[in-house]
Picture 1 (cartoon, rainbow, N blue to C red):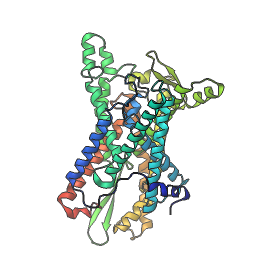
Picture 2: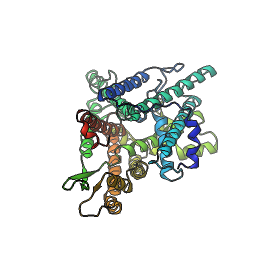
Picture 3: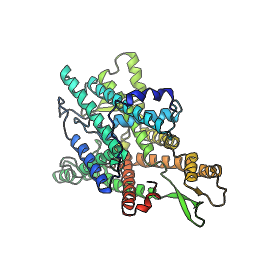
Length: 471
């Protein structure tokens, strides 16, 4: 049964907007249609400007927007940030046993979903309010302030429902993954073909008119513009991640109901996929967002606020007038972009501190997700037993299967978390298009969609496979 905290959300869950699960079988083509429609709605919202906001305002968050699939000055100003942050907070609370929740219990799972929705809407209001109070949109009248706030809250609810529409079975995958992939794809295309800053149009034009040197076009500039090395690194990271997706440990299993039937249970190197990077990226981005917003609004005035910003995140203005981190925790969880960014980092060890923090948090979130996501050795052993599977040479019992899985799953999980952290960090150091975390997430999402499409297609063409595929 649910704990006391989750029980609070039982009456609230009845009035929250909800997408119902389909009561009939949704065909493969229909799922494609709904997935495409959700993507189109998202892309349209990234282009509709917020009413009452000056379109010429400076973007304070730059590459960090890729993680949250957000776009400055539009309805998608907050992107998926509140949803991801709400899920991160609740999952950490459940993983640390501060909140009692049995995810195998349908009632607990329903209450957890209701709590996630409430937290998402609440965080949308908090982040929208923080943007307004910080003065990021300039001086606003009360009516305009309320209009902007309502626009952002309404968009947050729409994004939440679009994600739920796909996850409930009307479409493929999840809206969060789809939006991240679309945002990264937009960023990559803009980095390549933008008339002003794109590598192959703006960059080559700069080479011809002398405003850009060959060194800057190849290696990059201090302001992080796209470079040839970044383009090559983007392709290399794609290939490396796709290769990593195929590395696995395979345990032999047999089906107790049919003697002679043998198969293998795969334990992938990237066992928990790209989730650790999502959580780490969301945590770091929120630290950066909120400390910068507080600094913009209050600044280091009194001795109390001065020490607060020195510890948690201190900022200053660059030569171009943009705000940049110069110290505190926020500075050390902000990735430098490109070789020039690493070389000019202050202090010089900042990139390596960032890399170390990223790797540690990826490993921690990997282990945390084992229990929260039901991927731990005990859960997998139970699933194999329920499916009538056993490991050859061992008696058909859950305990020996769990002991064998415990030799591999935790070690592979930590190793996978460390590897994705290293790849994401070094990708940023080389200046990949779309940020290292963004590329890592998008490749993992594309691979997941490929597997999902193959499964859906196989189930559509060969209905007898549904039981094998667990559908």
